[in-house]
Each structure stands twice: as structure tokens, then as C-alpha cells.
Length: 222
Ligand code: ATP
Image (spheres, rainbow, N blue to C red):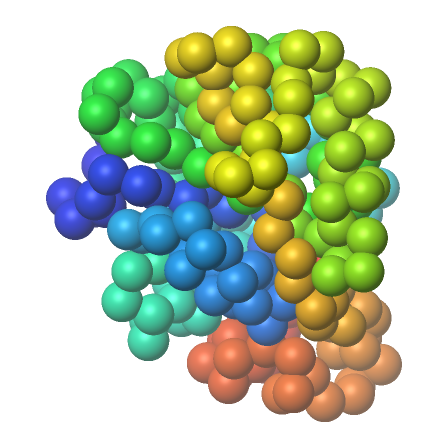
């Protein structure tokens, strides 16, 4: 599997459908990079998202191409097409295993996830095993990020205790930590962008210009 050579040793992983990528996704990358001192952020579009069967998802090639355009000006962001190389649904556990095998034990992986998705973590395949490969970074609203994150940690990850000086929940040695990161929400979703395009409304304030041009040029979401 091809991965960039300059990922460094603290790699954030942001998975999603990215249909299309929008400014909220880019804001996440900005919000987590500094507090966690990440060397790079890898955007991993899902080939077949296990949780999203309700609408006709755009071709993987389009979603990945829009990501390439969106991060072109972000030097430490990269796109991985590794989920397209696997058959069947794109489970995060398989992705983390593959990344661990490819990058080796010296790289710390940080699996970035929104609070809304983290609250549903009990429905994910092998959810506890995820922490054997990566730490979690949970993005929440500034007013109640730690509180809502704590409820999900208590319900799903027994043995995890909040360490005040480290600012995260920690489990047994060797297991990943769970880091809450507060971010002022960016009011945008892919759903809303698809709907706006369908209605012929402008989206230039919510996606990078190159992505808006791509959507237009390829007639996506009409
Ligand atoms: P859709 O509207 O199709 O459900 P989405 O906008 O939620 O899509 P995804 O590709 O599913 O986009 O999101 C990938 C990740 O980014 C998820 O962890 C999700 O919680 C997070 N995310 C998406 N939009 C935002 C936003 N505006 N602010 C913070 N996090 C977001």
C-alpha cells in the first residue's frame, strides 16, 4: 500500500464519507494539529461506509479527487486511498490494522472522530480493539466536550480514567488514550451541501473553491 513518506511519528487519521469534503472537515484538521502536536493528518475516505446506506454515494474516485483538491494548500495533510483497495464495507478497525502494519510500531496513530460519531461507538465493529492501534481524538463543542465525551467513555471503555495533567482518559499501558478536543462547531455538513447543489444554491462559502468547481464540472449532486 502506498503512503506518503513524510507522515512523521504522530499521525492523525480522519475518516469519513467526504461526499463532499467541506470546511468543517478542514477545521477539524486545524483544531487537532496543535494540541496533539501531530506531524501529519491523513484523510481516509471510506470506500463503502458501513453506517450510511441511505443515499447513493458518489464514486470513490470523485470523493478522493475532491479531497486532493481541498488539501492541496495544507502541507501536512494527505489523502489515503487505502480503503478502496479492500473489498466490502470500510471498517475503521481494518484501516487501523493496515496502517499499523504499514507504518510500524514507532508511529503513534490518532483516530479523529466527531462527538456525534463517538456517541455511537458501541455500534462499531471491534470498537475496544481500536484502542490497541490508536488513540482517539474526540471533537466536541467547547461548552460540554469533556462532559459528553466522559459519558461515552464510561459506558464503553471500562478501566479508562481521566488524567488531569495529561488532559485525557487513559487505560492500561499499551492502550491508546482518549483525548477530548474542543472546537467551535462549523455549521456545515455534506448533506446540506448536496441539497444546496440540487437546488442550484451557491456553496462557495462552505467548501474550498477548487471543490466547488469540481462539483460543477462533474455535475455532482444534481
Ligand atoms: P453527511 O452530512 O453526509 O452525514 P458529514 O458532513 O457528517 O456527512 P462525514 O464525511 O460523514 O461528513 O464526516 C467525517 C467526520 O467529520 C465525522 O467524524 C464527522 O463527525 C466529522 N464532521 C463532519 N462535519 C463536521 C463539522 N461541521 N464540524 C465538526 N465535525 C464534523
